[in-house]
Length: 167
Image 1 (tube, helix red, strand yellow):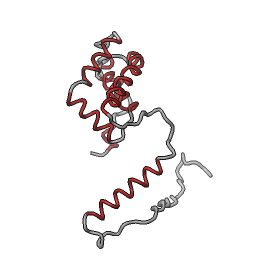
Image 2: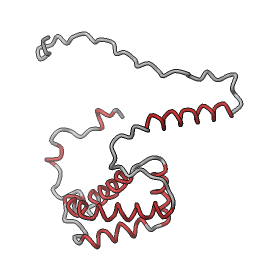
Image 3: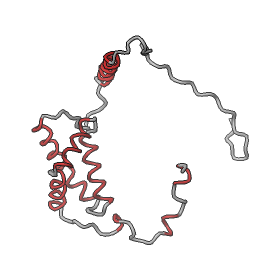
């Protein structure tokens, strides 16, 4: 199905039954300590810990991970957004401590764009090319040596309808 047709109809939310979704009802947990302990218990589950480490190793920042966990709990009606803001720093530090203790490299998510990202891209590109060469298909590979040029957009015809902007 097309994305256009999968979108909700404008005004559809006004016809739905009030308090039908979990986040529209009162939260299950109101105490910050209870909410924090609930999240820590979930993190301590070996399957959840394994998934969390996999996401971190793939490059997800710690800030994005914590925000995702808290946003999911709010959408499920477990606790409120306000409670998320209260427990976010403690949850962040707890996960950070676990990752440091395990010796897993991670990005915090607070820093600005790192100028070394270009270097990382070049290093990863060289690793990928080396892996392709190790496949034993050196002669058959047509590997790019230069950056790919940007594709120029074709100029569209100006709109000529009643509501079209005039130049």
